[in-house]
Length: 310
Image (tube, rainbow, N blue to C red):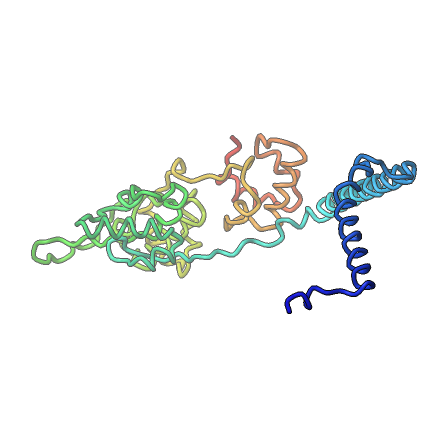
């Protein structure tokens, strides 16, 4: 019975034989066809491939040239723009992000120090020093805090007010004496020893000294806010001025903002000084400033004591 499964008719046997031959042929071709194909055969049209590559390179070259031209054009326009508008570079003054006020470094908190323009780490150093029992007994002690630059201390010094409390039983204050005070070095306590100078006038003198750099004449007391003629006449005889203590502006290196920060120098005068220095070079004396039309003779007399030509 099993022979019935393997019985094929004549036509079936012929088909099987043909199928076997085809399978064998395909297997043989699969192994022998690669022998007749040259893998290193180059493209039929070498000229066409070369032209394509040359065209591609030319496109890259053209794009590079255009990019370089555009970059050069952009740089030239930027240069022309800066040249055209450079005179307006100092038109606006930068806004201060801090404010100045009278303070006692032994009492003010960290937020107060930051408001005065000190960095948070400096405020932290001060608080650590106070927590360990440290105390500032004078303004110069405060200048020794790590991180405070000389310029920042000079700016804050007029506003430092340290209350010195005595441990003994309260003593009645001594009556004011007719002492002589030097306006560029006296603190508020010493100034208030002069008859006619109260706390308000003392603070005004310190504030004026900080803004201008110091007093160059006794008559500048008239410029103190609230100073009445009769008060000036009462106290002028007890005041002297040491001009050697005046902080001067280095006119040959100061920026427009630095010059304009002085109350006696307007923005236009500061800009004119800057332009003269840029065109002429180093300014050597007061006579050089006579060339500036924005500065009158009266203004020059007020400004000159605060200028250094070094």
